[in-house]
Image 1 (tube, rainbow, N blue to C red):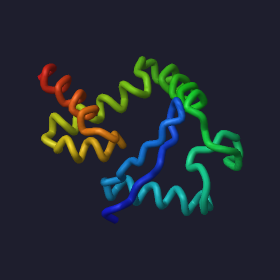
Image 2 (image 1 turned 30 degrees about the vertical axis):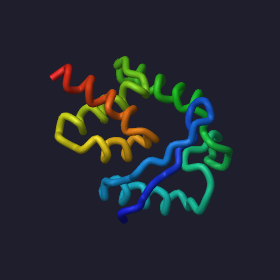
Image 3 (image 1 turned 135 degrees about the horizontal axis):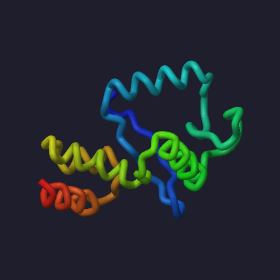
Image 4 (image 1 turned 135 degrees about the vertical axis):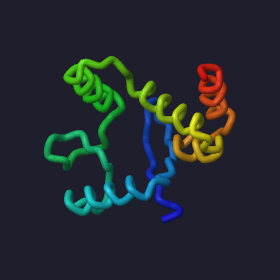
Length: 121
């Protein structure tokens, strides 16, 4: 349970290893995987039937835009990620824990979130 993680293949070919440090999220993910009959391969798949290759960044972005339009909100995926990190930092979560959660290779990158969060407080 202390080493649950996912590898995310992102925009520009970047690969992030993201720590799943919330037991509730891990339990929900395991339930989803069991119900979906998932054994290996991409977690989010491109085809409608779930048997295709990995969902591309562009496809995920398009789906997110569709959901936002239906909800009448304007927020992009990066803003959602940024808001989550800012909430963690404002709640006193350590920079190292936030770094692991976001999958940043460098604490300096995460520190930019912290600087912005404290300047808005």
